[in-house]
Image (cartoon, rainbow, N blue to C red; front, side, top):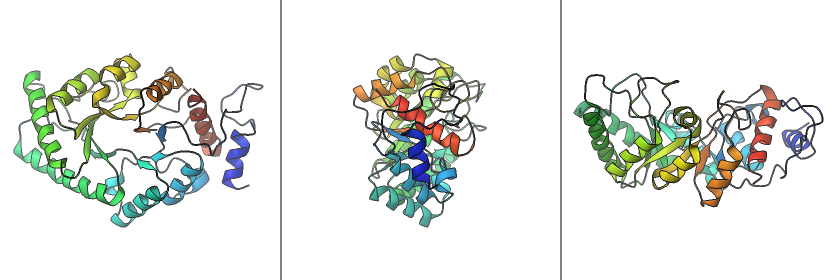
Length: 304
């Protein structure tokens, strides 16, 4: 059976598979697999290997067939230049968006909290590389994590250094239009990092005051850090450029944890959100059945 028939049979016809549903529970979804999603949910390039194989271009084709209008790849900058160009072309041909890639995320090093010319020089070189990656692929956002906090320096000085460094980096991005997105991460999974919360990230972006410095709101991390997801989305709205998704606990697809993603997606749609929502999470089971369960979860959450 080919991949499209397998998906269509499992999703549209309501075939019962091992997705964690109880026998007799509703297994159909309110849209056919080829109906475009209402929002730009973005699987990572390798998410559907069981159906599409290992070629990222085939993966893009498959995801487009399933109704996705975006993808993301954290490791985009490390891919060969010719592959980056092929990815960019494949997405452009399908009018698909490419979500943020990781430009800098060293969890073991103090970096932006310091007023250090060598660190600025190192990160500026990465930014220039990221700008070239953006030219080849069409990606608009590059993710940065400010690194660890310093245990001896007053917090106010560290915050000021982060603001100054980010303003310098944002100005370096200005001509290209590449937007740096900061990701606050939870203390449980990543202890010792400077940036952890949405209010903190919002305050920093407001202080930087540059269109090339925004936030990627990772709802998995922020559910752990502070909860209050929808009010924080509203309060930080002007500075949010992208989202990361993942349920909690477990960091798997929506419906496997405590976050009401359908309500969140409905809220974002009502606000007119046009950006990407990167599916930066695992799946609850292996194999083709796990990939079908993932698709079904997003169809259900998109049915608002």
